[in-house]
Image 1: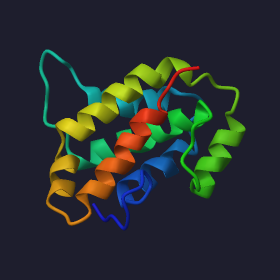
Image 2: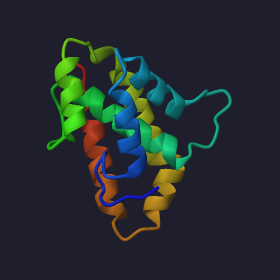
Image 3: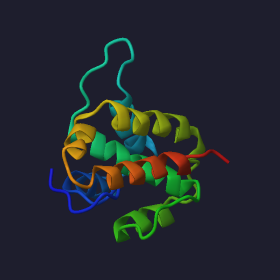
Image 4: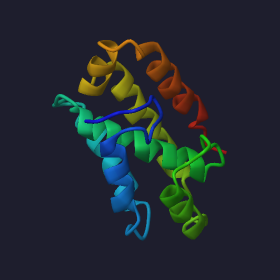
Length: 136
């Protein structure tokens, strides 16, 4: 995964996911990315970096639907949010929080960042997303 920053859309996988979101008519695509990251609690699988990056991007969209976006958002995220602002993101907040928590504690993405000089910045950015994931 190519990354150029610590933000939720500062990597190739998140931008690929965001490109796919453009054709999503509802929250199903977002829910799918979050659920994949959370996995089955009875049979937890290793969360690879691509799925973790997609989950972080999905969680950022959920936060934005709640009015807690991290600015600036990529243009295609803004367009999707404007086209779908009536969708209720609140029901996805608990799943998004669970997904972000898993990325922070048990994922390949966390391991990769832990080996980098900017781990603390990534961790702070991702913990900030977790704090912004609040239901109204």
